[in-house]
Image 1 (cartoon, rainbow, N blue to C red):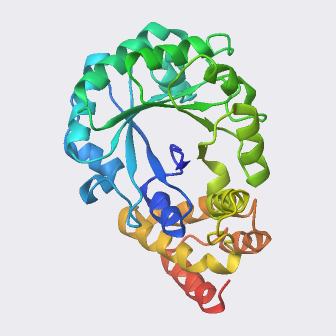
Image 2 (cartoon, one colour):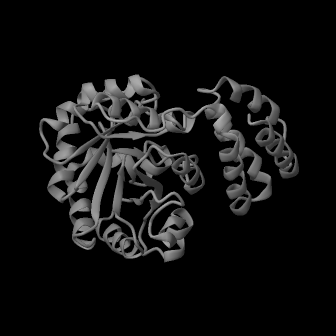
Length: 323
């Protein structure tokens, strides 16, 4: 199982749509939906997870699991029940966000300091969500350090989580390398709930090392997939070859990307204000240039373009020239 990670401010429904059209991932998790002290209206869930209007799946048919962030068990349970009723395979809970503003308001990774609260939240949400739908959770190794990683995972398991994604860093580590995949193996030795390894997986070699050190076959891919949209296929190709099976499509070259860049731009143009559209394309292109040398040239070309008409012209030329 390869899961596309939630990434606030980057990996939203637009990029989910395009990356799942390219393929190689089996499921997505939405960016977090903040829950404070109210029952959110359906329109709020639809704004962040518009896939709920289409059976909880992207255009390519990949399931999207809405993720909730908050600290009040009863309120989270009420909201989980509402979003579950809108049509999705389950609900995910965020115990990993390291953002200071989120933590200051009692959400995300700050909750890892109190395993009892983790238990209460998961138990309440599990009771509110129909049994046929999954309740999963994403955690880090801890807040200031990783000394309670196992205790936190056990609390999530006791509450009824069906799956736990472990980002192999603490809040203090943020997104700085390395990821401590071996600590996931320590957690795996204590819990029976299926675990998914996450963090610092940029290529196939990283994926294999993460599996070896964590003991987890299932992976969550974030920035590595944004930078290299073919990463999921490359991992699947390795797995197929290792099992003696037929390899799926494995390579996503730069020449394959212009139509997807155009699709991304078309979706952005339909949902983002005109003054912010160019920035969204530049944001993704900035990641792509980490993997594709050709993307560096493209990024430098569009870096100063801000008018949608200019982007339209550039994309038309790029598609016509096939990169």
